[in-house]
Structures are given as structure tokens and as C-alpha cells.
Image (cartoon, rainbow, N blue to C red; front, side, top):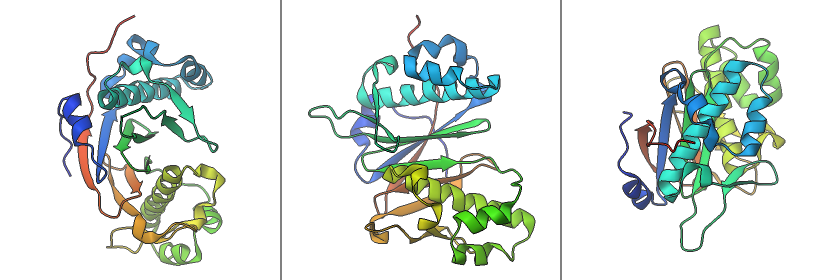
Length: 252
């Protein structure tokens, strides 16, 4: 896996076929200066959400994530970032209204710590990343949100290995539920992940009526110590990894 500079927007949009996922990585420390200079591309709703954060660092990270998301989506839709209008599903999943003659564009955003990640596809896609950190009462969380089989796999592990396996499983479950639009309204233990050490995590149980053959799970580290998961309604997509830098963004 290598993060590369992306091609021009027209090429990005043309090459985004049904079997492809574009993954984008952006770092908060590198682009924090954009928070104040480009916050005007956010909608009134996004600005209101930003204002509700109690910690200034959290507010700024949220704003940068929205700036990045709008810039990325604008490359596929060939419109200005501030012109994008989001709608929301019954469970809160954001989407862009379909335009006549324009292929659907699915996307998902996740941010944690100093990193933001965005997944772009033509099919339902979910994306989640987490910064590794100690988890108080981890065993209680496992009993509540992980299946009996998952718990049996994790319990014999030492603390460091168990914590890593937990985040591998947690991000995979979240990515799937975000892809389906179910979000946290669905039980995390309705999705089971194979988490045996030395093997690539994969789905081994999905909530009905969904079928394992229709979905795939891809896990990696967006950055060191940031376990990341991608879930998509395609059995074998081609992944492309893009390192974000802003297009020349409009000024006030």
C-alpha cells in the first residue's frame, strides 16, 4: 500500500468504476492552517455542528474533515466545494442527491486523532479508523458488542494484542454498519469478524438478508497506530490510495 498524489479531477471521475474504491488520507497537523481560511465552504448546518464542540481542537479537526470531504467530492462532481448539498438517510447516513445522467457517488468519512480518511465509490461503502489507545473495561465492551466466537479469539491474547485485535474488529463492524446505513442503531454483534492472529480479518457473519458473498472487508493502517477498515458491497474491488492536498480553494 502506497499513498500517491491523485490524478486530475476529470480522470478521477472517469476512472471510478463500480469495482473501484478511492481512499483518501489527510493529516490534521499538515493542513490545520486551512481551518480558518477555508471554513466558509461549510454549510450553515456544518458550522452549527462545529460550534457545538466543547474542545477547540475537536472543533478544528471537524472543520478540517469537512473541508477535505467537500474538496474531494467536488473533484468527482466537478462543482465548487461549497455548492455540494448533503441529504441524510433515516439513520443519519449522508449522501449526495443523484443528478440526471451522472453515476451515483457513494462516500464515507472517518477521523480520529490527527488523521482523516475518506472512501469514494459507486457502490455502498463504509469506512472507519481509530487511534489505538487504552480502553477501560475492555472485557465488558467485548461482552456487549462482540460475538461469543470473537470473544473466545481475543481473550487469550496479551493486553497489547487484544487491544489491537479489538480495534481491528471494532472498525470493521463500524465500517459495515456505516456502509449499510444502519449505523449505531444496529447491534455491533450482528456482524462477526474473523480476528485470529496471523490472518487477515474478514466477515464471517452479517445480519440478514445480507450475504457474505456480496461484501468484502479490507483492513490496513491509514497511518502508524491507526487501524482502519473498509467495507463495500463488492466481493473484490480495486483499491486506490490518494494523499490529499487541497485544490486551489475559493476565497471569500
